[in-house]
Structure formats: C-alpha cells, structure tokens
Image (cartoon, rainbow, N blue to C red):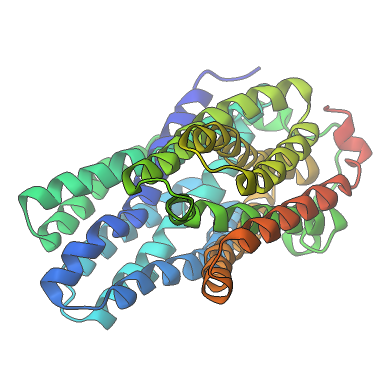
Length: 398
C-alpha cells in the first residue's frame, strides 16, 4: 500500500532542513569578520540570533496552520523564496539595526517554514517505518553545522562577508526552489489508509491544542529542550574551565553533534520496533542522567565518552515528538500541532543558554547549570510518563 515516492519526501525534507537551519546558524561564522569590517558590536550582531529564535517560535505555529489548510508545498516554497531574499538583503545592510531586521526577523521566519510542514507531510506518507523516516528528515537538519557553516568559512577565506552571505543566499534559491517541486501530498489511497478505521469528524486544531495529550506533549518538548540547550551551548566553556584545551574542547562539541546524527537513526529504528512512547521516555532519562554525569568528568576521554551518550540521547528524542503527535492527533491538524509544540520548544532552547550564562556570572561555576538542567530533564521524564493513553480508535492502528 505504501508508495515508493515516500522516500523522495524524506530526501527533500532533509535537504531543505539542512540548508534552512545551516544558513541561520552560519551567523556564528560571520560574527568575527562582520564585527571587524563594519565596527558593529558582537553583542548587536549576536542579537540577530536571539531574534531568530523568538521569530521562529511564532513562525512555527503560523506556518503549521497554513500547511494544514493549503499543503506543505506552498509553505516551503514561500519559505525558500523568503530565505534567499533575507540573506541577499542582509548582505546589503548598511546599519546594525537593518541587519538585525533582515537577518533576525526574515531568516528566522523563513527557517521556521520547513520543520513542522515537512515532518507532518512525512508522517502522512508513512505507516510502516514512520519513526525512521521522520528521524532521517531530522538527520538532514542535523547536518547543517557540518555543511553550510564550513562552506561559509571557506567563502570568507576568499572574499568579504557581504559577498559570502550574498553567495549563500543565491545558492539557497538554487537548491531550495527546485527541491520544493519534489514536495507532494500522498496519493489518495495512501492518505485513506492513514486514517483510523471508523473515524468520525476530526476536531479543530484549536480544540486539539486544549487536550491533555497536547499539554503533556508540549510541556515535555519544552522541558526536554530547556534541559539540553544550556549544556550544549556552554559545553566548550565548561570543558575549558575543567582544564581541557580550547581546540580539544571544541572537538567535544563536534563529537556530540555527530553522535546526535547517529542517535536520530538509532532511536527511529527502535521506536518503530518498540513503540515511540517507550523509546522517548527512555531517551529522556538517558539525557538527564548524562547531563548530571558531566559533573563527575574532568579528562578529555571522559568528556568524549559522555558526549557520545548525551549527543545520541538529545539528538534521538527530538524527531520522536512528531511521530507521537501523529499517533495522538492524526494527520488533518498535525501541522498546527507540531507548529505549536515547536513554538514552546524554541522558547525552551532560548532559555537554556541564557540561564547558563546567568548561573556562571552569579556563581563563577557551571555546576549549578548541570544540576538544574538535569533536574529539568528528570521533570521531562516525569511529565512524559503522564502521557494519556492513545484514543481507542488509534490503538487499532498500533
């Protein structure tokens, strides 16, 4: 019953996510040359990334609603066009405030157009291997720091930051706009097979957002991201404070990122075999324990070993929220559900680095960051254990 084209949806989703997220996070590579060439403050330039996260929180919900009503292709096409335009305009900005608007607002808005719509569309194409498919789309997004950022760094060795950013904007158009043509709704037969037998009228999106299932899902997602965001962001600084050399400390961050890619595939395979809720709860527990274990490490080998576990755990659980949302709420309102859940998760991601910086400034130590993050991680496990049972009509599909 499953159409072979479904894997093309996975490829398209991974590619678009990689480029969209990669262009946004490449700002870290542009930071030093921009500050040097323009005289803008690093704080002012970095503020564009904070704006990115805040705009993404709102954009996730808005794009999710539009994708439910008009389909994913329209949303990702608009996002692709806006992303290239935002980078082109940002490369021409003559003032810091103009850059913050073009890069912070427009890049954040466009980057949020890909995750919820493509995750929802992927779940519509898959009945079997759904968790693996969603995880593979997420792998593409996880590849962003390993592809776009190095490319931006290479461009900056040969030209100025404006030309480099303009080049990336034009390349985004070249790669993304053709990829959007690959985005299709599933055939009627596949879509019909995805509907629960005997299902009546679907509740509206706004009714779904008030259910206990959504509240638990969104709260777990928020706590999960709030727990790991701080340790991820401050890991290099923490390792240096523990006596690790700067270059080696950066390599710990890289090991975590690579482990996250493997974790996405591993957790996807396990979720298809063992059930998504069981794997999600187990992954959240491993994440919380790994965060706490960082308090006991001090040597490079220990950091590497723990980075493999922590990276696999936080990378592996992230795609599973989309699969669980599909099981709870069906397909009709999934874009809205994922957009709303990601809105809260983005706020959690923004909270972690800020809290970590405050803790270090207040106590001159990262210990309380890891203690607090581990506590939030355990709270995420407790909330996840409270997931209500699936509705009887969905249990029929399990």
